Length: 599
Ligand SMILES: Cc1ncc(COP(=O)(O)O)c(C=O)c1O
Image (cartoon, rainbow, N blue to C red; front, top):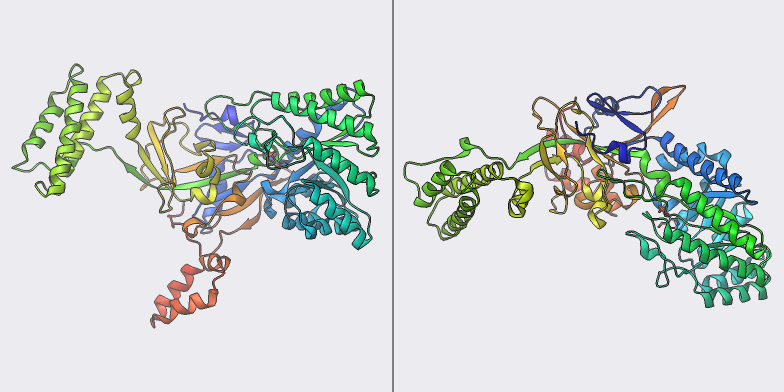
């Protein structure tokens, strides 16, 4: 039976038990039971399930692995970590994450003014805050206020102008400066889709010359005591470890040089994010483990420090994807199956048919293994002719439909007679004959990285797993956009079940959607984010917590800066019928996903 690669991407968080997917934790509830219990309250659209214990597992793993490496290599400094807010700022993710990792001193990374304010409001007080991204005077002033409030904050400068602004704000406010970090523009870049975040042409960081200039400015302005960190980020989702090794050597030597130049208080290297997780359902793509990642960091920095007789730096990470991706699962109900499979009953043969139709009928009856390709080509040519004749008004819709059905049946028969795998043309045709699964969700809202950059996410049904899935599947969302589709890809084929939706429900799970998707998602066609709930366990007992209902249509109008009352007035003024008014009010106060029958 197909296990949809769960042993490759699942990281033991989920298991298949007979016919359903279960959470591999505590009482091992099935996802379908959780979904049913939420749908029975009328929430029939897509649903995001978050599992805070999975986030906690990732955080614990990160600290444990780095601290083990520190012990193994007798490293004389410490490991720190922050969560980059841009990866997921939502309260249902951030609040439980910060609460449960308080003892580890887990902090936050901010990349904008809004994120910095969020970090200042929510971060555990002694836990670190790092600040990346382009900063104006207001953002730097916020950094000073955070320091004044007692936060352990480091402003990581992206350019010399930011350092200049720090100097200005310091003298204007006459307050102690936050820690200063220098973002390095390394020669080494990462690997994978986001490799351009690093490298000599990257958007961010200081060149070698600028680092020297920055250090001069720090010295001249009595900020030596504040220069604490150097930082690099060579790109998200690194699939191989070698770019990191190069970056560590390069940054390690910059650290040494700065120390030798007199950066006495510089004591930390922040290695950014980039730690990958496995998304593939087919075969492992990641070429390294967390253990290898941590060992390489600690070992390389130890060696450089030892050789150059400087103190070993503290290590900071800003891993986002690794911490958050696995904690969320998007569950979508199937609304409809659109089959492109015709059978003979779809034919509407008339008493008098155009001769081409009769010929096609004969092709279908006489096709054999030997003539299959020839007959298939003939049928495609006949279909072309019928379509041309239809455009000229010489055949009717009935004839056109018959030609389409017959061509389909002839191709299907040819595919059955010939070994498709060895025939490029037939394979391409076969790939086009998919079952279309219409799902109650928006790809733009829930899987923006699939739409934007073709990011793969594990997809599988959460029930029916005791039955063979035989239908090669195309996934359609409910947006009016042809990009709202996950087409069948024969290099990583998705097979789903042949279900009768009149009699049974069929839910698909999209896994590993906890990083970036929630916040990048957009309201194309005015679909809001799905309803969401945290699944937590207390003494082994499962509880649903922090349910947030999908945003209502009226709230979406407000988000678009419409005056909601004006819209409502306009709608209601156009009818005097109280019953219809009530319907309008109900609908606009609900969400825009399609309503399905409850189970
Ligand atoms: C500066 C910085 N730190 C951390 C991250 C998080 O990276 P990841 O999600 O790959 O861990 C990013 C993401 O692009 C980043 O730009």
